[in-house]
Length: 158
Ligand SMILES: *[C@@H]1O[C@H](CO)[C@@H](O)[C@H](O)[C@H]1NC(C)=O
Image (tube, rainbow, N blue to C red):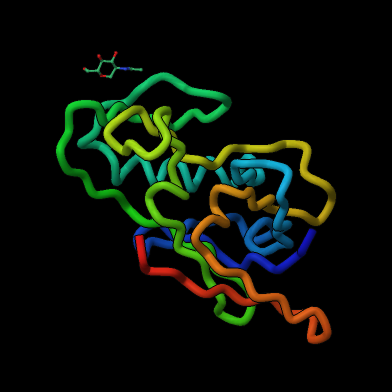
C-alpha cells in the first residue's frame, strides 16, 4: 500500500474545484479494490464536471455501485473527456478510456459503461482518495523505496 499526495483533479483541463480543506490529501494506491473512491464532496464535483461534457450520450442506470453510466450500444465512435489525477511533484496519471470507465462487456467500449469512480464516506482519516486497480492498469508505476517516491510512466501503446 502506497500513499502519495493528490493535489488536484481535472476533467479535460477544467479543474475540479474542490473546497480548500478537501483539495489536497493523501491518496492510497491499493490492489484490493477495482474502482477509485473519493470523498463524496470531491466525487460529486468530478461527476458533475464529467457529466457536463458527456451530454451527447444516452444515460444508463447505475451498475455495480457506479452511478455515472452511459449506454454506448450501437455507436461506432465516441470521444470522452479525459480525467487527470495530479500528484505532488507534478506527477500525473491520465487513465485511458478503459481505465477511467468500467464497461459491462470488458473490452467492448460500445456497451454500457460507467465512470469507474465512486464516493466513499468512510475513508480513513487524512485519506482523500483510494486509487483502485483499474485506474492503475497500463500505467507503469516506479517505486523509489529509499527515496520515498513514486513515479508513473505512461504507456501509449493501446
Ligand atoms: C442500451 O441500448 C440498447 C440499444 O438501444 C438497448 O437494447 C439496451 O437495453 C440498453 N441497455 C441499457 C442497460 O440501458
